[in-house]
Image 1 (cartoon, each protein chain N blue to C red):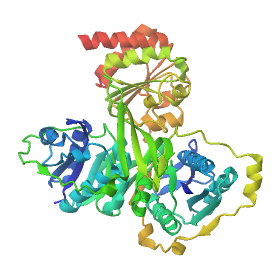
Image 2 (image 1 turned 90 degrees about the vertical axis):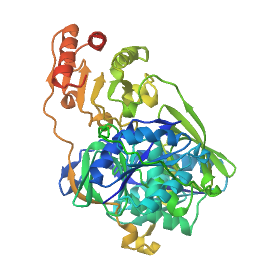
Image 3 (image 1 turned 30 degrees about the vertical axis):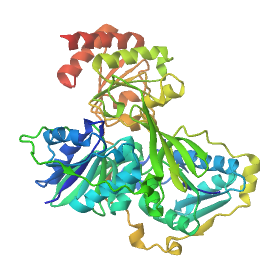
Image 4 (image 1 turned 120 degrees about the vertical axis):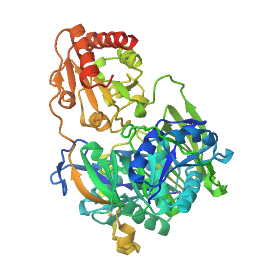
Length: 254
Length: 325
């Protein structure tokens, strides 16, 4: 079976990012594999392990340094890595790139993270499914392959739902889907011999219109500054009483 | 005049409160144009009265047994049909497990622009402007959709439902459901929900969350007691969930739920970036922690430094007294 995993390099979850109206300053910020993509990659590796003769292709779209996430995927056992070199394109453009690759070399199973944690757009999985005319599942917490279909569970308000999806399909991963493995020394050494295939959007026949971002950004802003809050003192009973009064009379939220 | 379409969610004919919020958001964008409400699935038509009461000018219902089980492909086909017929300038959905699955595909099908988790929507001179967080709330963008329609998912509790002064008396339009077998390539087979008298976390007006400082699952009782006294939804930090004190369904933060209630209690929560990502847009934040240096106090409107196991039960008693009166 052919398995593809789409991954993205993003600023780490704890990175301090300077925000100016005209843009983000990411210089010196640690870049990592987007956490949900780790679950996607692990699920791809599990499917490869469970189905002899499978190949795992990992795809990323981004600027020069973005290919670093492919080295990690190679160390874990990916067979092939494709880096579509492009700067400043959003999830829609990335989905167009991945779709072009996957139309040329179709996969039975395509995994990705439910969202990349930089733009948090939630756009990629459904858009990729639509571009490939394949069904998709968003934010799976379980994935069980059963012949030509897969059974997935996802969290919903107040519980969970079970879906059946026919392959080929796009499945996006949520936290809890699996426990991502770490690279072994042997894997790291083997990875050094593997080389990512580098392509440009033009190689894939994509023009500017296909890569146009979904949103025209006018400005960026940091979170609104908060003035220091009010500390409520006294013993537990006194503090509780005073807090209730403030919430009632000052904030008027109770 | 631009028309705005909202997608109202319901469960067996019981409308979710977010539908009213979407109608309020839509009326700010419509600028005098019509606000249309699409509602899908068995029981859809029963929601019409309430949708009109909250300001819908027209209700489009697909009250078909073919929609009894959710399929993103079938939902997309029905909604894309409505969008092609009505040509709204924007389609609004509330952030939910359903819209997370549906919106990306709907945007691709209709050629529209997706903006998720909008916390602001406005229209001026025919142009739509939106505000949405990125980087888990470490920044936000003000943007306009590059293509029409805008497909926006809107955070719960951002817009306040407004009763229509004179509700529309339009008859309910029936949305066609084309039963294409290829759409059943993905289909929900089973829904398992736990009956709860508590409000849904992502939509609750008040959220009471506990952190690792509580120390055990049993100790979370003080969180549940305070939540129940206030009719609030209980939540938890990732540290508390990872420690097994609370289920993942209660997790607030980057890898859990995002909430924006009117009032948020952070009890024994230090305030890691990943937690702040899920609750920083709450209107009022109360922090209760034994550590006066906990970062959560920087974000809190009101803070109490003290023993959780004394302060929280005292608070519960005070609220009970107040709300009984």
